[in-house]
Length: 76
Image (cartoon, rainbow, N blue to C red; front, side, top):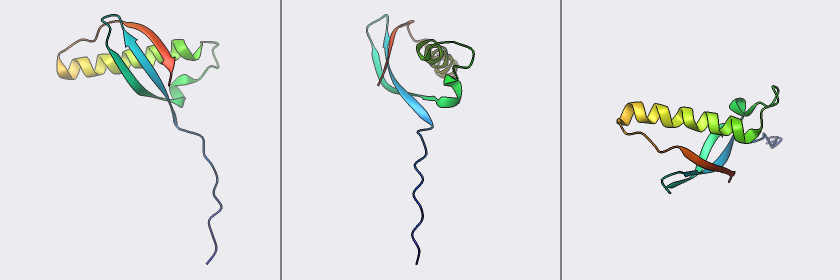
């Protein structure tokens, strides 16, 4: 039986650590690489912040609790 040729695909997402203004921190927030497209000149940090804010807003709508504003984002 023949072996499959392992073709390493790149990760479909990047992980970020997020610190909020109230001092809370979340680790390994996943952002799809599709949302981190830099073709318009935006930095990865700005694109990640926008995507994470969108995630937080969606979670807030479901739970009824808002998150504090994002203070810092770092690549995990």
